[in-house]
Image (tube, rainbow, N blue to C red; front, side):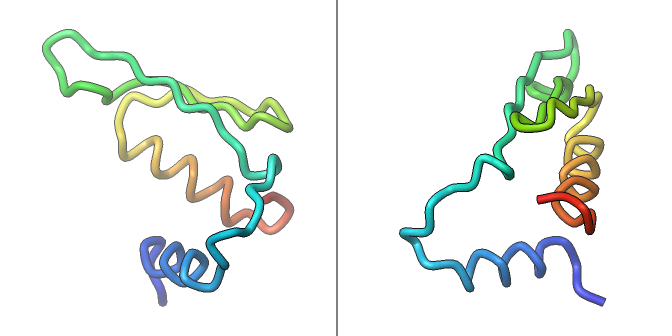
Length: 76
């Protein structure tokens, strides 16, 4: 079973550097500092085309969101 990191490397290595960026895969990530916590641990992410959005309280949650979004069969 390949990991997310392995899948990402495979995808990136197979793409020419001059490939246009697709708006279907465009996101806005907004971070906020948590007092007394890690910098940039909390925030929100929004898919620009669909408007799907979620808040996250950790980088682990943010990573899980992207894993779901980018590898869902009906998206991206």
